Image (cartoon, rainbow over all chains, first blue to last red):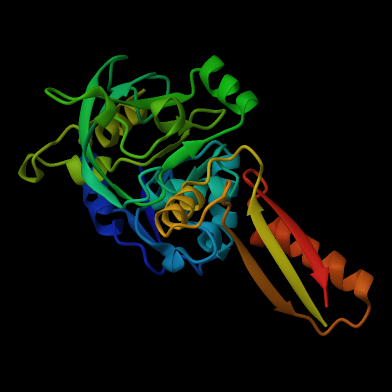
Length: 231
Length: 79
């Protein structure tokens, strides 16, 4: 399986994501600059990393979503290619129309950088096939604009089709009201595209993909891809 | 010719920044402040001389980039 990581001006989780892909897949992903108009041949999965693309000008992810490479990423997704969109990457993917809803300023108005606990809501996705429903994963969030919202029809569709990937839940010894770090509706922390092959999420699995970083549970999203390959 | 584009959150979309401003105004002793909504103003200089065409161009800019119509509404004034 071949991975590529897109780099926008202001991306800052691109290397972490590349390391996580390499640990899982055994080969370093291709780097793709935002001005490129095509992905390298034979790419199976594209990573849209976290960061502050284009300084978060206009709206988070808005300018990056209109950069040349995103047409190629949209074509890739349209062909059934996989996309992992984390943090600013999710903002970019939503702005590009790959995923529904919107991500707004945290209701606390604060940039929130801490560990959260996620509950796995579905395993029906190449990124989630190594998990079981109900599995709890710890990983960090670090964002200012991560409050997921969607209109009632979109929410009903996401719930009805089982496309909510993760919800924030209280961790051990954590008060319930501390579980949701940003005010996301229905505690939604990640969501899938209609074909389940594009995953957007605010928490950072790539920052929790090595025991040396304190938690390795995020690595299960990357290692699941090797099962997809074998299947 | 210039397009003045006003972008605000749609009614019903929570605006935590507007709410923080409201609370700050309250703290300064301003009385009678109801809701506060924050938006943005974008001015685009256009070489177009026909107001109707300029408006159409500005509206396309809003649809394609300047506004996120999932959560925002926009209004265009040609000046």
